[in-house]
Length: 330
Image (cartoon, rainbow, N blue to C red; front, top):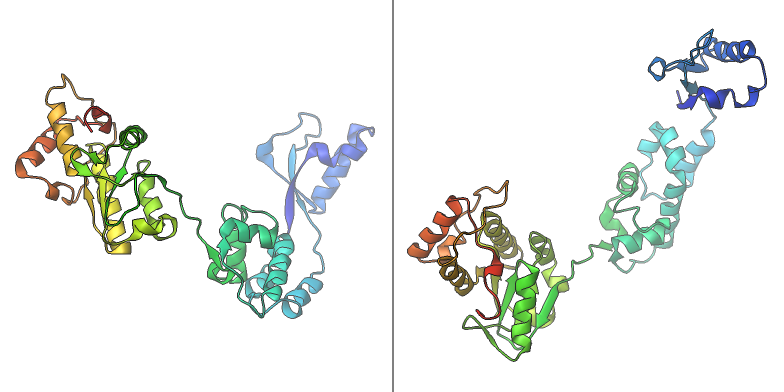
């Protein structure tokens, strides 16, 4: 039974000039015929007889035989019609998009389309670029029994913010958690320096905090060819807090699984942070909500004495931001 919500005002719009008794009789008659179902929680108009302010309007059943025939005889085999045959009211709502998908599949019948991005494919088929990623597109594909892979879509890679001092191979590429160290080290390299804290660095990559994990999932797509050379050493430098350590370990684990390459902490930078923190009157308090969830990978690159200093600071509820270092330290 199809129905929709409707207000008393809408129902009486064409009867505004009639006496209230006639208006009430009209509404009550339709309620008696079960064409309207009162919604008591909507309240009443306060008149006599009292009428609810909202109703369910029962819509007349329509003959949907033409929809059945369209699904059965005018739809490409790639679209499964079982769901829609059992839910014709849903098909009625989604029909325009189903027919667009049907037309696109017919066009691609004898050729494999060039893979393009999700938003580009969404616009090409449905005329709305966000339909497949943010709209009801995923639901529509499920109703049609269509695997998204059949639409030949590629995930858009998250671009790297990077500075290449040189593109020689092999080289050290340094990933930085925060923007200020990235800009400061870039300035350092632009001034003609080739080493950072005594280590030669060819490329800087801005990780943007937790977003670095998603960015590096697309490394093979986004990175320049020279960066993908397995002879390069990838290094990571972030805040010395539980969250920064977890970001590094999550990145290192996912990248090793995907590319079989190890990203190492940039040890000289962390040691320089420790040395400078020793003369700071008071380190900042750890941000609320951080918890120790590290696996031990990060600490495995440090000597026992340095590990102890780090954990003492972190267990005391303090942390060392990357910004403790600046151009004069590099």
